[in-house]
Structures are given as structure tokens and as C-alpha cells.
Image (tube, rainbow, N blue to C red):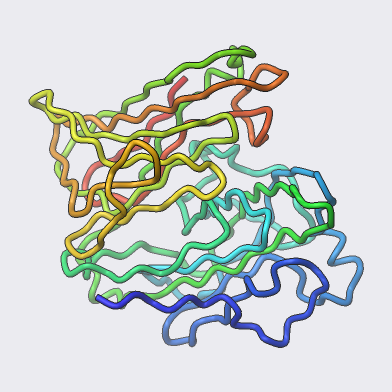
Length: 336
């Protein structure tokens, strides 16, 4: 199947004076979907620029509130994400509490673990600056995820600036509809959070260790896609499925924290093959059954000057997390 085109460069008249104007993407037609844009509405307004600017060498993590623009309940199937340079992750969460849209970047309602009682569910997220829309495989033609009308939401924005000039914390997210009458299966959020115990017992300086985690699978289904997430001291993240009979199937490896791959798993997508040196994954469908276990591990080498805590700090914090979409089981584990 042909891939969707790269949408970057879709705003030729944008001239903000900051790096990454080419990251801007045009919104979809109203019939096709909607766009969420977090960033200045007026690039000539110093007050707006001041909210989103990040100085040379700086790092920050915080949330921006908004409401989804859909006037009615909708289902979505697919998205395109594009952020300016410095984008490390964007986690978009729907909330069941009222929020004041815009204004500033502040402390998040959800602490990034997905377990806040005020969190309704997830919207598309990203672990790098660009995630293209992917072609839907035949077996997933009826999979959709619900977005209630005008839902309060927050964008958890982690940016770090390794350049010697100021950047903007800004992204564009296109979300594409599926007709509710065509939805036959509900996509669910897959979330595995490893390393939470490092907030209490940090990884000591000089440590060179592989940290393993696992999450049980309670019913049959299939994993539609996954992405790993860790920071600068992570050397490799490996994900496997341990079958109920004890056999282990390696699913993917990632080696680059700053540009970690997102892997689709279906009957038509072809991923880079598994290797021991670069990002790779199986191609095809990793269907799961009750009794299977999702396993993942991170090889972390603390060659820095301070112990590593579980935090949104690329150099002084670490994580060993998984995100994805699943049909069938609930796969959601918070682990020390």
C-alpha cells in the first residue's frame, strides 16, 4: 500500500524567526478531521512568543490546556504529528475536569503515569518530532477511538534545547475521523511504565544494568502498534511477548532515545528487521491470548555525574516506558 505523503512544509507563508517553520502542517479538511495546534497564534506578539520560547541549553516539561474542537462526539482512526526541533515527547490526555484553555504552560493534571482520576483517556501522542499517518490494514478497518465533544484536554510537553539559539515549544496534530457507523472495534491505550522506583532509589553513578519489567495479558486480542521511551543514558530497549507456554517472541528493539521508532503491527506494514545494533521489529500481527505476558527491558548506563531519578530530565532522569494501541485486553502497568 502507498504511504501517506509527508505533510511538513505545509505552511509556506509561516516566518516565525525560529527554527522549524517547516514543521508546520496544514489542517485536514473539516470532513476528514481536525487539527490541534499548540503554539503562538500570532508570531508578532511578544507576549505569546514568551509563553512558548525555550532558551539555549534549557529543558522543560509542563502542560498546556485546550478543548478538542469537535462539536459532536467523533471517532478517529489515524493521525499525523509534527513538532518543532526540541520535541522529546507530547502526551495528550483527555480530562473529565474543567480546564481553562491556553494561558501558560503549567503543572499537569496527570503526572505522566496515566493514573489520575481526572484523566478520561488518551489522544494521539508522540515520542519524537514527526510521526506520519500510517495506512490502515484491512483487519483494522473498523478500529476507532472515541473523542467526546469539546473534551477538556492537556498536552504534556517535554522539550530540550541542545542548540545555541532560542526555540519554540510548538506542535501540530492532525486527527482523522472514522465514521461511527463503521466502527466495529474500540482501540485501547497500551501503557507500561517502568522505573517508577527510581524516584525513591535512583540509579547510582557508574551503574551498568538491564532493568526488566512485565505486564500480564488477561484476554485475547492484538497489538496494533507500540513505541518505547527512555532517556539519554538508555542504550537499548527490548520488548517481547512471553507466551503462556513459556516461549518468548522478541517484538522490537530501539537504540536511539532521541529518535525512537514507532512500529505498526499488522498484515501490511513492513518494519525494519530485528538486529542487535539498530531499531527494528517484527513485521506482521503479534496477536495475544490470555496467559501471555508483555515483557520489556532497558539497558541503562549511568556514566553521568549524578544518580538518575524517574523524571522528565533527559540527562539526569530515566524512564523505561511503553506506549501503544491494543484491541482486546487491558495492558496498563505501573512498575518500580
